[in-house]
Length: 152
Image (tube, rainbow, N blue to C red):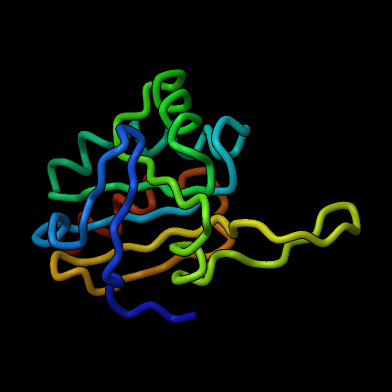
C-alpha cells in the first residue's frame, strides 16, 4: 500500500481521547508503527523518540507511536518508561492495514501476521515526505529528526 497523504483517520490515544486529522494540520507528523509495548526493541525505539521529543517540538513536529496493544498497556508502558508523546491503540488493526504495515512475518520457520516496524513522516499539509520499512531501531529517531530539521 502506498500512502501519499495522511488518511482521514482518528487516533485513540493512551488517555482514552482521540486525535483527529484536523488536529494535526500545521505541524510535521511522525507516525511510527511498532510490534508490541514493553519488548526490548519497541522500548528502545520509544525511549529514543522521547529523548528527541524536545528537539521535535522545536521544529513543530508531532509524534504518534502505534501498535495493536490496548489503551491500558499503552498507559502502563508510557508511565514505566516516561514516554512523553502519544501512543495510539489500533487493536482492530485498521490503521495498520491502511498503512500496509500488517504483514506476514516469519520466526524460527513459523509464519504469522504482525506489524512491520515502520515510520512515516508527513509535512505540515499532511503529505507524505518519507517512509521507512523494516526499521532498525538504532539511531532511527535521530535519523527522523535530522530529515525533518532539514525540511524546516
